[in-house]
Length: 233
Image (tube, rainbow, N blue to C red; front, side, top):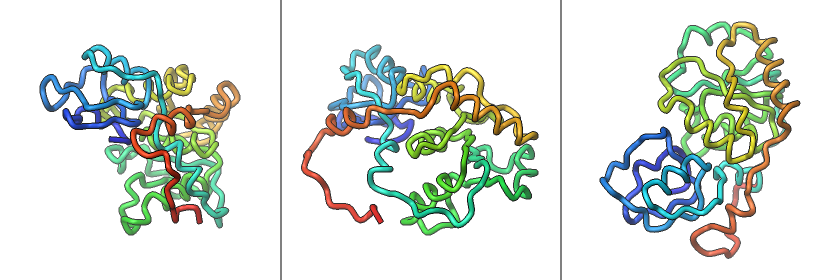
């Protein structure tokens, strides 16, 4: 298991390499389950959850999205946007976002990429993110992917529908030693100039996110032989 807030689905045969917890009190679907091996997790809050259940977990933190820039570099975009707004799929369609669709320098990005052929969705999403100078997102991987590609980003909260009360964002920010980024998410996108200022202020304070990618790769629970890939194109 390598991606997402999927810890609750772990079984006794699971090997964990980068997954995270979605909330501080989420039980496993199988009672008293102990994964076969934990190689790395998304952040220290996920580790704390495992350790409290007497499941050994190393202090190796990284989200696998940070590996993507090593494998895929998108071509320069045809159009560059001032800011990209990525609502969590459960926030899509909120009235608070409707005015952004008509703004030429704002790109509202569909986290699901549902209109793109499935095998191209990850590339299309990366390209969308990289077409923006800044990113605000209520989806965790909108923030993480922007951070991985060096694009200033900020967490956005538009509703109380995203499960977990921000736990997974806190977990991630702590993993890159920028825990205070969880303190003041964007909560209003009516004035896009103010949103831009908030993102820029965060980036000036915290700088580029740096994850423990080398440690994460070294912790891979399998072969260390380099794999052939066709994604660097």
